[in-house]
Length: 228
Image 1 (tube, rainbow, N blue to C red):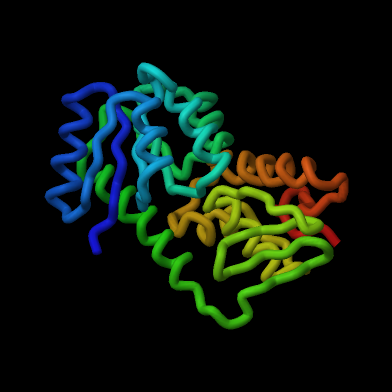
Image 2: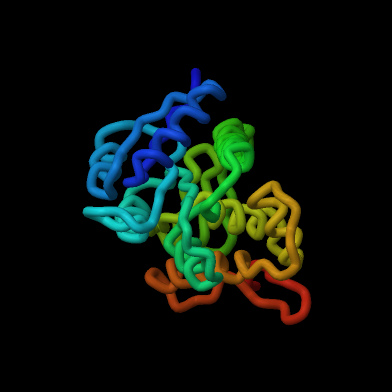
């Protein structure tokens, strides 16, 4: 079955360009032209991936992303003209899975969509054996992609889930940023990328809402590991 993709972009020319390109590659596209319309679509239909602009009428892309992260781990690629690092990092902090700067090459958009869908397929195809991993009061279910801390469900984005999954599978190992990035994103790591720090911070913030105990240790000069 072809992947269902939601495009939320108020510029009709760019929206139609993305829809046409993705449709030619065999994807089914639904087009929305405001953040409010995008939210209604996500609330009422099932999608495999969404592509958001940031500056839109109704709800902005940031507002839309924050709202949907309250109830879904739907993969999201943000496509925006904002090029500064702070804008990109703030969007990643809200739970975006990727960020593509306008103007963009259609080939790169297609490649990034395929990467996200491949990650989704890998997660859905995880072996059903040994589905449950438990370390201290932290519990991860590979079959449902849920994480519980002290019995409380913690909503993680897909990359956050993959990071904590890696740390829990090898609770005594220290992982470098490169190892974490390449496991969670399945892409080549760039040393200047601050993405790992942002996602680790997000996980810690979410865990702090449940407990004051530390579950991720920073090993200075090396990387991160699950707290002992």
